[in-house]
Image 1: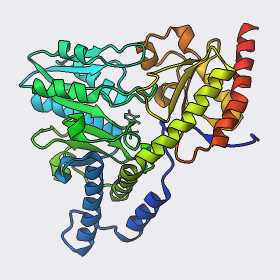
Image 2 (image 1 turned 90 degrees about the vertical axis):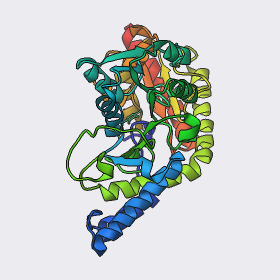
Image 3 (image 1 turned 60 degrees about the vertical axis):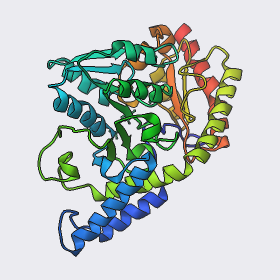
Length: 385
Ligand SMILES: *Cc1c(COP(=O)(O)O)cnc(C)c1O
């Protein structure tokens, strides 16, 4: 048995906040009505649905009628990309995105590229930053959508979303951002960010899995991905996942209130970890932008090791981290993000992502610092031998 158990994979998912759990429990226990029903039970459920919508809208600085609930970040991203493409295809069939988007954006873009659309996948620099000038240069007369994430889930780099939003607006092009990783960490205001569409996910902000939302600016028309009843302004039919949505609403309320103080704590913890790693393993390479980065994300490469082996070695010590991105951790190849920032196979092979969270303590950081150099040293010796 390891001496300690430490969860340092908050970018993959977060535990449910006790206040979120309490509200979800109340809804599951008492408010089982269908929000579309006109009787008392339905009206009570509907009221909880709309409170949740108001809370999400407040987190984003949006209007209540501009928030559509989905089954999570993936569906919100899919609805943004596919919904825009299908709705505006008569105006044009060109889309601009980046090489480092989450698969929930990349894969729908690739699907569209196989079906009569043209997609420009913009490169990023070594820090993982998209250059707004590249966006400007890529714009064509038939461009209907620009989708660039707010911050990258693997390397933590924050993208210049307001600058790109300004360019999109000048050209009258719909602009989507995947803000799944920034909700709860950075201020999220749809006016400041100059976005028309924005995705969030509950389970990345201490809410439940299977709930998310897409902000859709008034006036933007999306073609739905599924068809059925008229729920969510016909944009996303189906009886609402009320417990999940209520959980998302509460998580959004907490995020709006506490993101600044939490982020300061995360930054202190990650700085301590980064300094410790640098001191013990001087040739460790920190990936992502040194300053413009998520406060809770540390992505680091150790030459002469393998990500999977580091993960297993740390797991044996009771520490949970991730290699690159949770979704691609099964393969030994570099993730599309590490490739896009120009890491060679050799440089990027031993890369792990450490993400701190609400429950992380200084003792947790000191514990990982206590065992990390040993794990790295052992793997390097094995690889040499
Ligand atoms: C987790 C994640 C998603 C997917 O969200 P789900 O709710 O798990 O479907 C999308 N984009 C980014 C950046 C993410 O980190």
